[in-house]
Image (cartoon, rainbow, N blue to C red):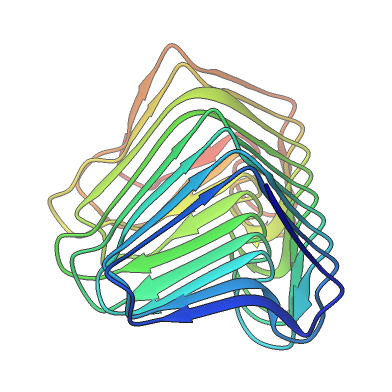
Length: 239
C-alpha cells in the first residue's frame, strides 16, 4: 500500500510501458492534481482512494494525456476532486485509439469548475471506447459545461454503461450523462438508475446529440430536471 498526500502533483508518470497501482491512497494534492499519466501504454488501478486533489488545469483526480492508453480502474473511489477546466474526477484526452474501462467503482462529489465532465471527461479519438460496469456516479458537477456525471465527445467509437447509479449530478447540459459518439455509433445504457440530476439548460438526466441511436435497456430514469428542454432525456432523433 502507498499513500501520496499533500503535494503539488501527487504522482506524475511519463513514457512507461505499463503502470499499475494497487490499494493506493492519493489525497489532498493541490495545483497539479492527484495523478498525471502521459505517453504510457497501459494504466491499471485496483482499489484505493483518490480524493481531495485539485488542479488549475484538467483532471483533478486523474489526468491522462498524449498517446493511446488502455486504462482499467476497478474497485476504486474517486471523490472530492476539482479541476479548473475539464474532468473533476478523471480527464482522459488522447488523439486516437484509447480505451477506458471502469468497474465496481465510485466517482462522487467531483467538480469541473469552468467546463465539462464533473465526474469523467473522455475525449478519445479514432477507435476509442468507454465501458463501465456497476459504476456509481453521484453528486458530481459541471455547471458551466456538459455532463455532470460523465461527458464523452463525438470522437468515440463505442460508449457502453451497464449497471450502477447516476444520481445528484448537475451541469448546464446533460446533468447526469452527455454523450456525443461518432456518426454511426450507438451508445448503450443498460440496467442503470438515473435519478435526481439537474441541467440548467437541456437534458436533466441524459443528453445525446450525435451518433446513430441511443439504446436504453432496463433503466430507471426518474426525478431529473432541466430548465429548458427534457428533464429526463434530450436526444433529438436518437432514441
